[in-house]
Image 1: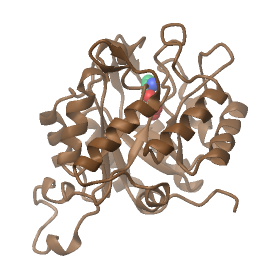
Image 2 (image 1 turned 90 degrees about the vertical axis):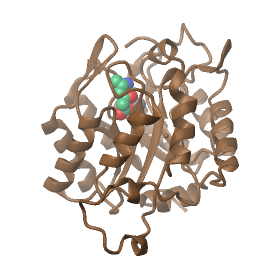
Image 3 (image 1 turned 180 degrees about the horizontal axis):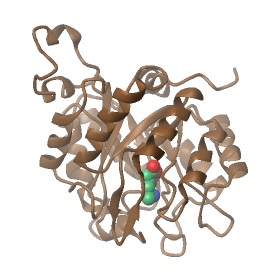
Image 4 (image 1 turned 45 degrees about the vertical axis):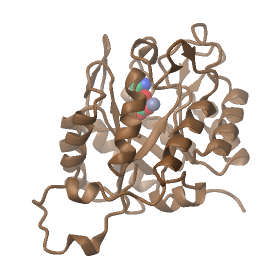
Length: 315
Ligand code: KMH
Ligand code: ZN
């Protein structure tokens, strides 16, 4: 889908307080558990995505050098997790195995961020190719919990693909981030956990991606419905508002105990008439909001602990 973020200009953990759950059954409203605010805020940056053309947005980081420079700046601004899509030499979305590996190594050398590779790729990537992303040994991978309409396109995620990706992530000790574009995706997450157990590390982190044309709307009401439906195994959640929903969703997520995802994958407009020039502008604003809400950005070590990622850095 072309320029999704531009069409609709521009997500938090909840460590559940076990003590406060006494007397509750699994049938209790989950919002009671999912909205205990975490002390800090995980700020994820999704700097590139697969939808925006470099020609339409020259400031989009598409080369390895631009991506690494972006990661360094975003960590300095308060981000502790980077969600990466790579581009080829012509700036087109790619799942090239060598380039993915080189990218993971380069970002790991220059930052201490949790490195998450997209397994969603672009709507045109075949499912088999998307499974090969794990070969690059990221800390984390995205795992979208269902097929969704995506503008004029379809983002395909049949259950057998999700299950295979989940099993492979468990075997390779890679922590999945469950991407929820719609309320039905929450039910598919429930099905995955029932069938295959918890992810590597035992934590379940999800990200609501709201505001995609065809998915759940980027409204606080829709987000709240999603939060209330979360399985009890979920240990942290974040939210993203695509396009113009980015600020209301960020505010709603912070107010509801969630974490944040920002970046040019989701939003190309900083404010009315003001295109985003650099991803770290979005991270800085998210960090300011989080501090204002008394939930300052997590450090990269805190983010690693929150998600229980495996230590892959060489000391
Ligand atoms: N580019 C979208 C079709 C993911 O990264 O896992 C899918 C996406 C989700 O961005
Ligand atoms: Zn993505």
